[in-house]
Image (cartoon, rainbow, N blue to C red; front, side, top):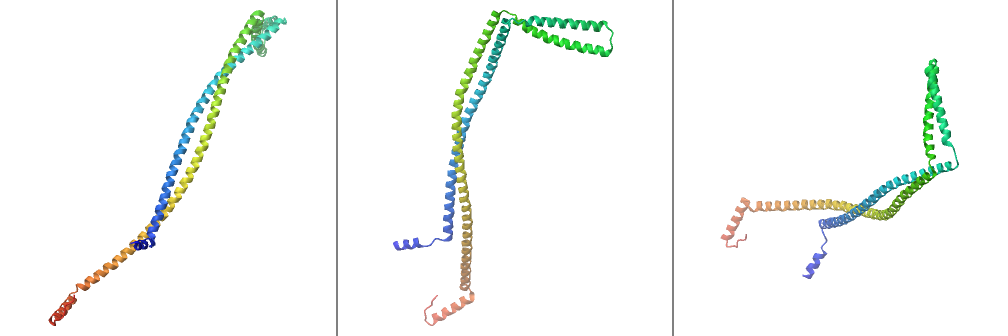
Length: 296
């Protein structure tokens, strides 16, 4: 038995057997690589999902920072407006203390403009003049009226200057207090955004790390897919070779079967030939009559 087993082991493998083993080997490697690629793909997708969640947190923090910045800018404008108003009042107070008589001189200017406008209107209404001259007077009146309006606005401002210094001081203190309150809001918003920015910086590092790891997994996934495709191509080549060997073996088997079939038909034809059967029967009868032994 041992000798028989040894002979079986030493028997060379057929081409079909070798082709089948190579084909199955390629298929096995391909399937293993595809499984590895699927695992890498899942890991990559998981990293992408984690990064997306981190980015959602970053965007939420950024929206919060934008909202805080909007509030900060609003309070900055209010603070700056209060400070500017206080500075203007201080300047007016200083002008008041220096004894400037801007208001009285403006009143004189406004009265002079009123007088000149009245004189021109009276002249236009009571004096005959050509159309060109009348247009010239109308243009001058328009200029004087605009100047009067500007001077009246300035006079209104300067009349405020004439307020008591104590009233100006109270208003200045009020504006500075309002500016200080608005500045507190500005500082609080800036501090809050600073804290949020630190959180965003940490999340950005985490997102960057996840992106790097996901890129690595994607590269490994593509390499693994490429190897699996190569093994699949080899498997297809082996399958084609195996089909060729199987076809050759099938053709040889069909040829041998045909030979055997033809041989059997020839034997049958020989055995069942009537003339030959009669001759055999006559020979057997002669043998029997002569006391010989009949052989079939």
